[in-house]
Image 1 (cartoon, rainbow, N blue to C red):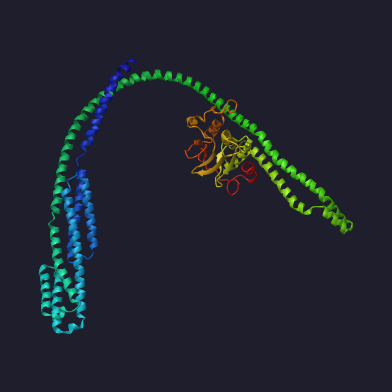
Image 2: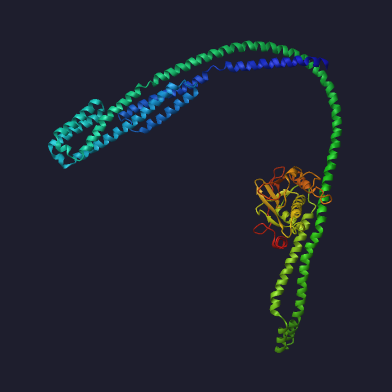
Length: 610
């Protein structure tokens, strides 16, 4: 071991030197590859595109001048392409290098716009002038030979101008119009003459303007500027290539040094490997010994974890049995109330039968023996309050049925709640579980609060352990009722809302109350085992801890306390995933509830409106 310890500083130094040399090689390789050829080819291609578009635009304007190309859209498209090509070129070179070219391009495009406007005016005036001449030839006044001769001279000069469009033909057209005005007063008196004269004046003026615009456009040194840009790109390429050559020379020198250093490193590394092999043999023996010790410790730890899980399960069952025991008296009272209700109605029906028995006997005597005594029958009928019995007997039967249904509902809820559960998670109707739990806990909340259920009828089946979920929800409902009971004053009742809804891939169950809420300084501890703010003997501090453990560990969900400055009380939110750990989707299933997702009428009447 000592030789390796002595060699570590040298190895570290060699590693640093080697990494440094390698970094220098990488840097020089990158710099040597920057010859500028790619940037030059890129910029040259864009510059060639600018030159091509410039020549196409000049040609298109020339064709438009002689009306070989009538569509201005071609010129407009070429303008856009030339502007974009120039901007792309300017963006790819150093700032300011393309400024002269960009400035010249801007001036050229301004002249092109002026040219299009002047050419459009020229075309319109020529068309209107030709139409005016045609209309004048149709006039009766043109039957006069002198007038016709004068108009013919103007038309010939106009056609000559339309064909040539040069300054001499424009001058001849002006001379022809002036001669007609001087010699043919009848011609100038026509209503169409001012229109013809105005457009002839426009034609002669704008043909000169179009010529000047074309001349100014061709004087813009676009091609010299493009060639100047090409020369600049070539110079920069030569400079970049020279710099890259110097980096290649430096790269060769450093590569030679790195090769020599690598040979030295290989030699020394082989010596270190032999020493490391010897050390590894010793280390493997120690690892084998330590592995055996860790295996024993791991076995003991697994046993301890299993024991802890068993204790937690027993604690959870004990807490559930404790909750059932605490609720037993109230549940007995809940069952006793509808039982008494049924007994009263049955007793009433028994008394009713005594009143009906004479009436039945008289009917039997009349039917079976033929002993019909009208006076006697009327006396028996008068002694019986038949109208009262018709109204009250069906009502008594209906009330007894409601009482028996209430007893059945409570028993069913208790059986569902106290079910020992099953191993693993299975798709279950969460809404039905909520209704059972609320029914079981009714004696805890009915004297301090009204309870509303807002259940989503379209909530699908949720993978869960129903028994464990019932216990967690019971703890939350009882906790809310006790919180409201601590601050309740007089006969005023608080309010608890239990709701369910679908949020993405989770089922959300909320228990909200309007009690005092949870102080901010203890919110981070409310799910800790054995933490409670109640007096000694009134709380174990296990309710919220067990609920949190059930939701988090058994179901892979979350139980959180949500607070809001605008809301009063506390709001606990359970979120359960709709898919189990292996990714299998839960089956759809819903429970039968009323249209508003609330409790059935007998239970809600007993709690919220009593």
